[in-house]
Structure formats: structure tokens, C-alpha cells
Amino acid sequence: MFAPPEQIPIECLTVLRPEPPAPSRTIDTSLAAQSIQSRPDQPATAMKLLPNAVKENPLQRGLTMTMPQDEPVDVVYTWVDDQQPGYRGLLSQYAKDTRNSDPSRTRDNLQTLRFSMRSLERYAPWVNHVYLLTCRPQVPDWLNIEHPKLTVVHHDEVMSPEILPTFNSLAIITHLHRIPGLARRFLYLEDDMLFLAPVSLRDFTSADGLQLVFEEKNPAPRLEHIADPATAGGWNLALAQSNALLDQCYGRAERFQVNHSPLLIDKGRWEETLNRFPETLNVTRNSRFRSAGNFAPEFLYLQVLLAEQAALLVKQRDARKVAGYVPLENFWPITAWRLWQVHRSQPKWVTLNDNFGQKPSKVTVALMRRQLQAWFPSRGEFERR
Image 1 (tube, rainbow, N blue to C red):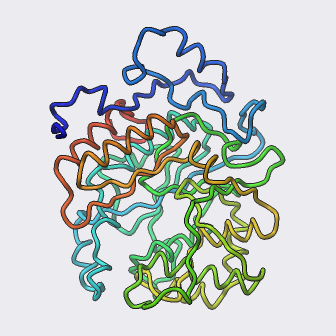
Image 2 (cartoon, rainbow, N blue to C red):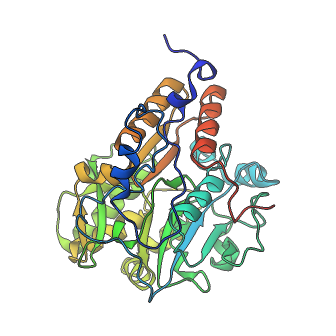
């Protein structure tokens, strides 16, 4: 039998309680041993460690992780909240298929963006500027839009009016490079991604500058293996379409899915990759929802880099040491177990994927709110005072 969350000791539920490290652009990997050895009598579940703040990237052992000073790196978030006035009505106007109104894609009941920005402030203070891409007129009510390092960009500022409104994340991110003022290199984060330890560009690139691609265990699907495209999931269809395009360019090969992680993007190369496939790009941009014929820009971009030897593949065994993933389920013990696994593996970042369906469990939502607050209890610089 599982006890409800309110009866479980806080150290069992709050599996990670990061301490903010001293501001620095260099990560001293010797801090790990000091942190643990200084309190050998405390159980691991109760220790206030710097989880992964001192953990080496397995591909970068022996290197000092420093952020280059000669080039700014920005961050782009995509976000939407279906509880904002008018959004649900607009969605229902266009969503003819019930799958297109799945609230797991548009729900913001955990305010993960707020906590992601707190994690960014704590663990990536070197970021030059933050852009939030959303649909007009949405802005999180807690966000300080006057912050000098923050710019809110609405879809109509980077997308053609004839394809709006759109509810297709695949279409939206094909316009990231059009954000005015965006640095040449930027990190693309979805609002459910949080850093759990200090990060630098060395966590996304190899020692010789190749981009790291974090592999998943599942092969990317193929169009011929999808029995009924009308009932297939939009993401799998997009992966299969991307796979077919890659076969045309580079020959047939088995390709694995990539980890759902922050994505380092070179703006020029991103645009060039998308423009290689003009017909599919046009279909994707004109699809208000994920549909057959769309591609998956993130997957396509990374696979092109791999095919052209501009990236280094990180196999799943090493990838999961860096990139965590927690599907949030309504059966709260499963979610609690997955959080414990994150605590055990201590990744650099984690993605909290909404698998709640139509009716999120109040118990699991309470558990996750408690966990997020425990990870990042202090109000961030991007929040209203």
C-alpha cells in the first residue's frame, strides 16, 4: 500500500533540493567530494546536495567547463496557457479532431515555465537574453515584462498572418530564427524543461566543438510502418516524415529518436536545414495542428548535423546521465518513483512531460507543485515583485 503524499516524509518526496552555487562562470568539479565528505553521517535522501552542479559530463572529463566570453548565447522559450481568456474558444473553433484539443499540450497547471526560468537564472547565469514566444495577447501574469534581459515575442511578429492562429508546435518552431535580435546561437527550451545543475556550452558540444546529440532507445518510425496515418499520433507521423526526407538526402539508415532536451541551435544552420525541404516546410507551416506531411524540425536538424559529421552522437547509456525525463502520470506513486530515479541519476536537466490526459490527478499535481517549490523556492529575477 502507498501512503498519500501528505503522509510521506518530506525528504522522500522532495528528492532534490538544489543549493544555489556561488556565482561563477567556471564549475569546480572538486565541490562534489567536499559536499558529501563534509556530512558523512547524513542519509543521502536528506542531504542538501548540489545535485549535478558538480557532476561531470561523461564526455568532458578532465576539462574545465567554462562559457566562452566572445559570443552571446540566448534562450528561446515557447509557451501557451489554455486558461488565458479566449484561448479555449479559439482552439475549439479550429479543432475538429478531439485529439487536437488535448489539454496536455496547452495546460499550464504547474507553472513549469516559472520554475524553468528560476533554474535558468541559477544554473545558466551566462545566458545573454531570454525570449518568450507565445500567441497574442498571452503573457504569464507573474512575468516581469520590463526585465532588461527578457523579450516577449508574439506569433504574429514572426509568422505570416495567413497561417495564424496556429496550435502546431512543429510549425511554430520553424520560425525561431526570425525572432528580431536573436543571437547566432541560442538554446531552445520548452516550458517543461528545467536545469538541475550548472550548465555551459560544454554540456551541448564536444571538446572539438561538435554538437552533442542525445540518443533515445527507440528507433524513429517509418511511414511504411504506420498502418493508418489518420489515427497515428502527430509526433510519430512527423518523425516518420523526417526519416523519409533524410533517406532521400543521405540514404536509408536506422535512426534513433533524440532526447527531449534543451536544444542548442545555430540560427543560420537551422534556417538552411529547414529550407532544404521547401515543400514539407510549407505543409508544416500551413498545418494549424500536427498533421500528416509535417516534419519534426528538432529531429531533422540534429539528424542532418549527424549525417554531415557536424555532431557527435551520445548513446543512451551516457545520455541519461545528463538528460532526465519524467512523464507525469495520474497514478502518483509512478510519478514519485520517477522523481526518485531523477534523484538517483542526478542529470543536468529534466523534462516534465504532461501525461495527465483530460483530468489531472489532484494528488499528483499537489506532489509536483511541492517538488517544484522544493527545487526552486526563491522568486526569480524574471518574476513580478
